[in-house]
Length: 606
Image (cartoon, rainbow, N blue to C red; front, side, top):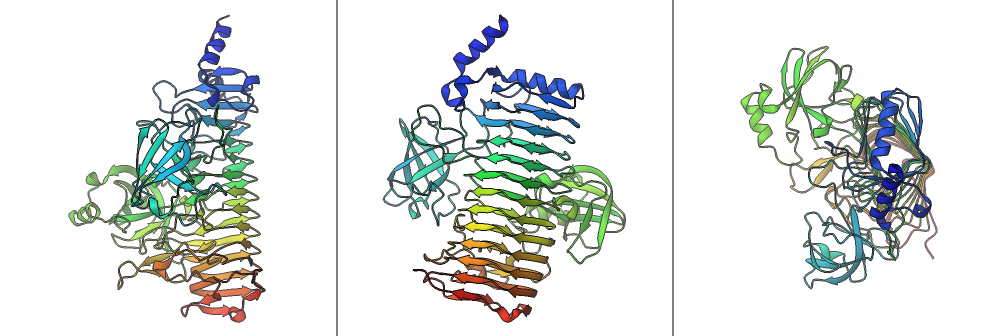
């Protein structure tokens, strides 16, 4: 009887907006029931747990900011077909930490309230400094300031939208949110759609799912409808995750809504970083994320102190302080390397015994400069003396999630496929309305990186170029392998880094359709093969100014700069528009170009 009363009470408390389409046929449970089932299985070291189907609704567990935590689960298969987690606070839904061979299948994660809202732009200031958004029926009446301007026809980010950082929002009247930012008038028009999102609640951790310091995690038939931050983040540990048929897709409309959702995650859909080995991601669907669609992230480390085989380093990414025994450090692809024999401790920079001059450099470092690194340091013992001076940047190929495969996935989302690591394959994917496939270390021009063996093949990219327009970024092609540095002689200008940052790059059998700018851009690379790629229907509209600071000419189809050893074969442009002015641009600093830079151009657009 107590169980029946509990279920009846929960049913009364659950608003229809929180439930999926089949909620009227689903059993409603309190989240504590799910936590108890999982804790029991982990505690008993069970090999399999079948969770009863139904909706499990609730907030974070007591004395924790996370709804559910799985800690040190080994060789456990969790079967959750028909199970939906409805998180009632904007906090982390699932934390997987220190687990090995953990599998989860069938689970659906969503939030009530949603971590985003949306509506119609009903008014734009005469000076373009603000817009007013009438919130769609059924969506949260919240003044979230992270705004995207959305084309009503495509229901995607408007082409050419500037970065709208620093926006502020306030409720002006019932159902209307005013968002203020000086660049809104450059893109927003009355009648456009807008999405506005947020991260986690103050004091709570962000992201939907975090896999931390784990090995061989398998997510299968796993769905995230929305998240306060990223959808899924894998960080640290041995890695080797396998995502199969994972979906980051909008959920059903809230109760009473007449418009479907136009957003899923507030930030990236899926991200992997600082793992020893990369993931296999296949047969997945990613839609409508607020930032990058899928990425492999990495960090470099600044050497702050050396004494024989002892060294103190600090990571540029504050989340990358997870170097382990056996990890290697190097300056470049060609440099000598050292191996970590002991991680002595993590310590604040003020307690690391750094020279006063080093502390002064760190404390005064400008944003996005080589000396701008995290506040924590790692004291290391190495197998040999560090082959560089204090102030040098090094990287670890063992913390770059190398060995990744991203194949047979469907992406319909504005954000990039972003790769900061080598030994990877991107193949057989259909990518629609995204910015593009970007291979770029995204570090200061004098910081260390090296990426070897990158394969990009058999992908279809339709209408790329949906990232916010950025003249300063060299990530300026539908497929771009690029690294830049500031021009010391011309402030605000960019130069491409010399060959050798990338090596052994294959770009083959890709179809790029309806691009209004550069289709393939490769710089800073050696031993490159670009063959059998088709660019169809490009340059129908005036190109945007992506990469202008680096001198990227968006009126061409393919651009090569600072490369050594390029095989360019059997690539063609089909039915281009009138804004295509040049087929292939080869910079004077490209050496050993095979096939003499020939690019076939067939026909013109009707």
